Length: 163
Image (cartoon, rainbow, N blue to C red):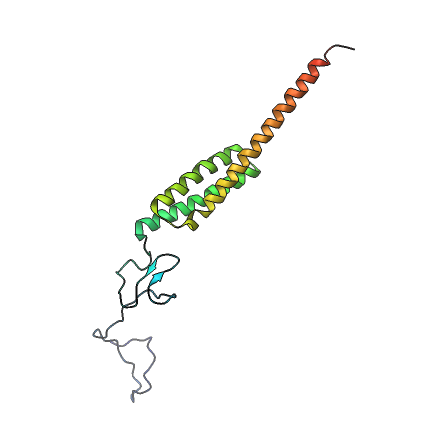
C-alpha cells in the first residue's frame, strides 16, 4: 500500500512512491530543555538528556495531572476574585470586596498547601488587596456618613425652637 500524500523519491527510476514500512522505527520524543542539561523550567523539571521521560508526564511537569487540574481551578477562581475585588471597589461595595478578601485568602492557602507556584494565585492576591482597600474605603465612607448625620442631628436639636 502506498501513501498518496508522500512525495516521490527522486532516486527512484520508476518515479513510484515508497510505502511506509511497519518495521521502521520511530524515534522517542522527549521534552526539549531550553536550559541545557537537566534543570527546572517554568512549568516543571526537565530530565537530563540521557534520561527518558515517562509516558504521560511530559506535559504536566513535576505537579502531575491532579495538581494541574487543581492549578487550573485555582487560576480560574483567582480571576473571579480579581473581578469581585474590582467590582467591590467600584460598583457593588462590601458585597464584592468582603468575598474577594476571604476567598482570595482561601485560594492562596490552597495553592501554598498544594505546592503550586505563586504566579497561579497572582490574580487572587490582587483581588484580595483590592477587597481590603474597598473594605477600608467603604468603612471610612460609612463612618463619615454617620458622623455627618449625628453632627447635623446635634445642630438641628440645638437650634430647635429659639426664634
